[in-house]
Length: 451
Image 1: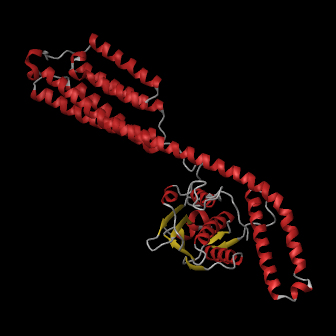
Image 2 (image 1 turned 135 degrees about the vertical axis):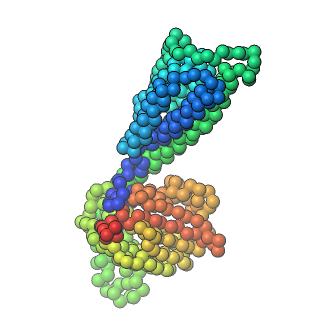
Image 3 (image 1 turned 120 degrees about the horizontal axis):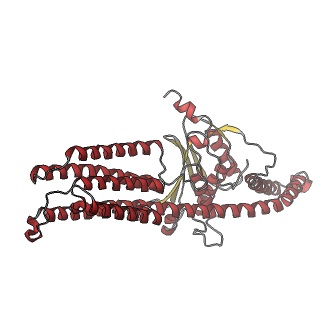
């Protein structure tokens, strides 16, 4: 049986291949466009309410037909924006800028039809500028500033005047002051609501970028480890082969054949040498230098049974309680990365609990779940928080903690998950979950062919 330290096997059916960092695309622009669409719907409702109140309550005449046409154009543009998001997910800075320019244009036309610069709602331009400052690149923001300033200047020269005297001496009794108060409250409320949501989108994006950088650093670390391991494997190959030949010769020599105790020790030495050769072969296989062992088609149950049998054969004193409850069997290719991953977890459990280790394999929905339990001292709380980070180890030796680091990266690249916890009765439990679509052959066709 070949073991390997390769980070992951290529995912097969049922899921899109991940990028090197496991993440495809950034939907921050899409989220921000969605915010603008929601704001535009509110603008439509607000304009309908404002026009109705001004025309019916205050009795101020308005060009209702023209203003209604502007509202219909705004509604059509918003519907088109919704359809565009369904067709293509990525939203660039230029599209956000174009959307804001359309909003500025529609606001300008409505202000032109309802008093021009004397309309108290002219200060809604500040809302567009504020959104641009948060959403757009600096040059785009300044472009919005220039456009809104030109629109404001144009409204001072043109615009259909309204019979709406300022009446500043009347205070809140003045319709103009009331309009300014409503405009201020509307600006403030919308800025708080939507800029808060936009900042949340930006924080989520920053968190994703930080995760991508962390994953890239971890993958670079794995590459360096692989290069080092590959060089060491080349150096170890020859002396291990020599030892295997010498031990084979010793087994035929009379001093060993006549002494059962010596023969038993010799057999154990051969098993350990064979295990070392298997590890070396796996390292070279992961580096693209196969040593005469091709992938073999098998089944999930057989793969697990053979893996456990090989692990126990190379660790004669280990007491492993094995339960294979996978159920209906599925075809798969014997994967050296998965072997190494499960072997690392078993080795850690055996080191923590030499007298009792349990492995249980189950089928959980469309995934393979492997649970390894031990009766050792458990994980330190700090290790559980940093599960899978390199050099996080409770063994107190330099270079420790790489086993779980490799386990987490193999599972993550296959689309799986690794969880660990301490048990109330003592000991620890590590749960590996792998999607069957990534490890089996024709899982999609076999399970969902009739749906």
